[in-house]
Amino acid sequence: MPPLYHSYDVTLSGTLPPPTSDCPVCEAENPTTAVSCGTCGYPTALAVDALRGLSDVAAMAMPAQTSAPRTPRVPLRPLGKDPTSEQVERTAAELDTTMRLIGRLGVPTADVTVELHQAALTQADGRSVEALSLLRSALARLHEATNEALARRLRSLEGRQSVLRTDGVAVSLGAEALRIRAEIDAGRAEQAIEKLVRADEQLGRIETDWKGLKGLLRQIDELRAAAEVIGRPVAGVEESVEQIKSLLAAPDLSTDTLDEGAQIAARALMLLHEALPGAIEQELERHAVALDAFPSDHAPARPARAMHAEATRHLRRGKIGEATARLRELRVAIRELGDPAALVVPIPIPAGSSEAPEAPPLSEAQSTENSLARLLGKARGLAARVRSLPADSELAYEAAGEIRRATEQLRARKLEEADATLSRLMRTLDAEVPQEP
Image 1 (tube, rainbow, N blue to C red):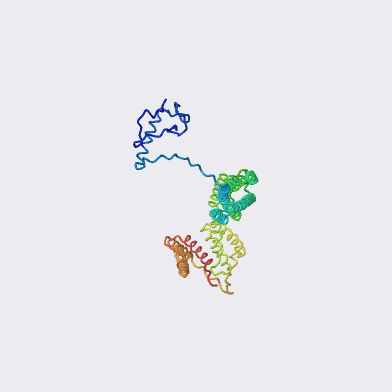
Image 2 (image 1 turned 90 degrees about the vertical axis):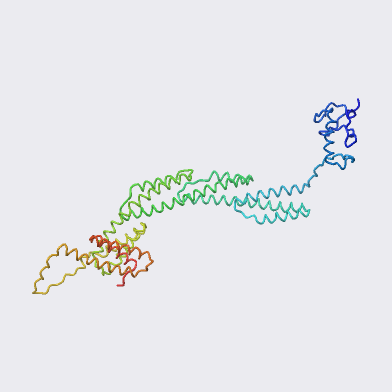
């Protein structure tokens, strides 16, 4: 049986297609009598139609070269790589990965980067063996530096844990440290770094939260000491402190535990700040009355008045610890002053003369006018001292406010309150700008 393509008038620009037994689809060799391609299964009876379609496409693509014989297509096979070049690529890739890992530990890798550039230039010159040697040397040093950095960071974590435990914070990284060390010993640097970075972040959060809680506890201790000086224990504070200590001693300490401790400490501080200022102010008022019994020109009483003014100023600014310290010193100074009545010297009456008749008692209106005149004179003297202060100073601003307050009290005939205000201002000025004796 003649080939099928003889029964068709197939031309390729006026010529018959060359007889072929190749499959038009996969170009596999097939017998001319085969019903279909043994490789792809394309029907042999349709081979001529397929060739005609391919010829039309070729005619449209190359109209000027229709008479040229078709060159058989030769498949291109990739050339084999140089084994040394492949090793260079693998080593460089491993070196790049290791550099990224050790960068997470904060280890500088500038020298390794220089060697990478040198190796690239060496390989570009065709010296692949020398480039491979450079890369392997850098990789060995980088592995050693990685292990040293991991060990150093692990020791740092353990040292920070010891500091926290010394402060009473029962944080423990024992199990995690063992896992990190096992990864290092097994040469799994990536897993070791991942665990180390995670443990470092966790410990850092605990350290930050503990620093805040430690500051609150320090303030509580100062105010508890102030409460002991005043003799005014605050209910609930001791229980709060014990509760915080219990939380810190619990195993598997977390940031949530520290947050709970901070909330308890904040409540205890609030209780202390509510109770102590009033008690300190009451005692300072009693000491003010005692100091007012001494004459204003009494030199031994001047240091005590300065202490009183300083304690008042600290209390007004919310510095309870400093106010309590001055209060303790003020108590000693007032005890050393003794009884002010001992300062009154009786006027001797000449012999043979009778005592002067007692002056008639003043009326209430006269007594009020006399007190008002005395307080006005006191206010004028203090105002003169205030005017001598630097105008932009904080003391001048506060003193001017006290003068205005006393003036309003005098205008309202609140003489006792005005006297207390002026006395307080005088003590403040004596503490800040003592008068010349």
